[in-house]
Image (tube, rainbow, N blue to C red):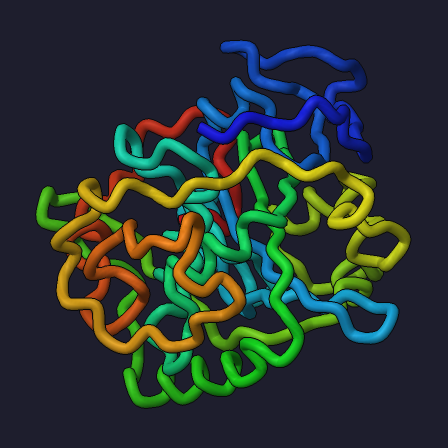
Length: 299
């Protein structure tokens, strides 16, 4: 578990009209800070990754254009911009960063030049996080250095074309139905575009854009990466837990993280988003038993 800084963060706004706690001691107020509060870090239900880059005075974010799964209607919503994210794997994932990285690699890891888990954990060291209490959802924001991931959207499109039509779901070995993300494309989008009224965003994105700290960052009104004090290091996952994930093909795109936190090569052996990567791990996904409010866009 990554301990938060003592800094109080900013942009807090309680969706219930008061500052308090949810059952189990979780925060009922949303906030943006360097790290999650201890109980939120321990009992989160889902997490996502939002890569961003700076273009002059503006911020661009890497998001997916997809038909998100709606837990309320048990059907896919209309196509919209969404975060890369997913539900936590019970008893296996012990940090929001781990869930966020795994979800991102599941979405784009098959594309040529996609970043692997080592480079993603390297970027995590200067990350910050947004807490959305209604879904017990943590959104981790990482800055992508200039000149990197430039061709990732095009590589994803090429991979998608070569792969052909995708089934809406698959049945895991234990008999559980897992809905596949219906992603049409990924793209670098100006953050201010997502905050505009009428923007086609998923329900989860629209709800989180009501958090002032996130909205201000996307619109260019604030820069938490420089305003917040440094956080505790984000350690990579134990290699033994994910060893034997299957093959690990092309990963490419090491990014600024180099060898990852601590310079080692540990973590998710056989993963890294290549063909066959993380196979054993992904097949163990458990989608039930998640507390908190169901969220559209988190299959």
